[in-house]
Length: 114
Image (tube, one colour):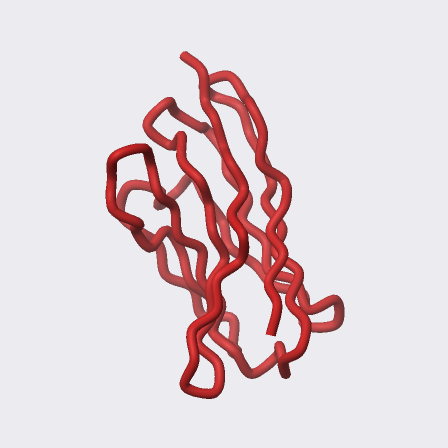
């Protein structure tokens, strides 16, 4: 299983980004996919998740601003980040637990300037 995240960058406060995570080596459509983030000096935290049935869940800090989605044909999971704030600055990771093992993407850096 491989997860390849992309889409991070530098954006001003109030701006938007769309993160993408491409999955391979797995039956993507049955997996719950998650996005985590880790800010400097902080622990990694769950941002959003989406099940195989496309049920979603969000951290309170991003509800109403971030949207997770998936494309089972392309085997990709997305995270739309809107109304970004400096406190959203972090490395964002896609994650899945598949076949009793955990897999992380390499991370993509989001930097929000004030």
